[in-house]
Length: 417
Image (cartoon, rainbow, N blue to C red; front, side, top):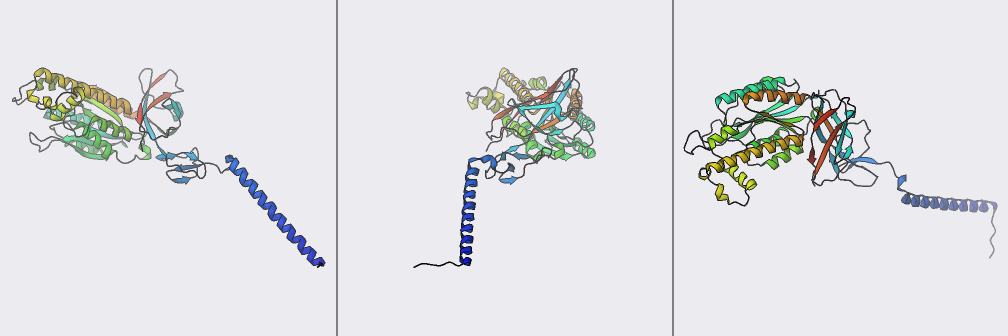
């Protein structure tokens, strides 16, 4: 059967064919574009900055970084690795040993495991400081405590008005002859000089030295919260002590790890008490003026210096011979000096040796100068592995005529997850 078409029908047929052809062409273009996008990842949108699991626009180079900074990733990628800011205290000296206090961020180069890092945070020597002042009064006489108080008074007076200080001491008030001292936070961080003087005036002598416990409390309580922007990288421990721990539940490795994680520079004013203590250790246990090494000290000595020995061999101090007592005392003093030097060097601080408490006032003055001339450098490591490994830091200075030397934090342990 034949069909006839009117002019109107012909026009409608042409329109239908055109629409079908156009749809087919658009579908073909879409398929080609999809294939090209899969083959060319560079056509995706620009990277975004992520922190944690939340994607954010990339910050401009001049923006101030937060405490954690993420990697740059492409759209659709999920990154859960964040990088923590590493703070590096640094003091720079000229050839004559005088501190240089007018440097800028561009004068410094920071390396982590020999890889250059981009400095994102920089504080000049004018920025305020937060200081935990630890005063070891264990075994001190009334005259010694007075000297310690005067040295501490002079120290806080030499600081700048906006520097904040916390005071810690070993409290033995009301303790019986067999009751050991405890760590007491006498004053939390404050810039109120009158309150700090009252706190220092209240300290007394104590029985026992929980030195490691005090360092742990400084990390856990005094510097528990992240620092404010103006004091980031400008926190320090200043301790007047001989470094001999006698009663702590914590040990050195724990205290060191916590302080390094907190980014706190450690300054030790090392009082020389070795000869005085040794003479009293050699006395008869029945004499009132004699000293004894605590069970904690004897067990630490056995564990470190004679790990194969039977624990019962070091259970009773009074059963030890004089030569053995003297050797244990000397080894423990050498250990304390190594630990203080190690911690000061690792955190960018310093150890000052004071032959007696009168000399401690000069040492406090030197610490004050150090703090007042310290820079703070901060960077986000290019190595984002959370492997818990130790990473070495090296700081170099450029653009200084006549030469210079720099003392800075030597390294840190990466976070682990």
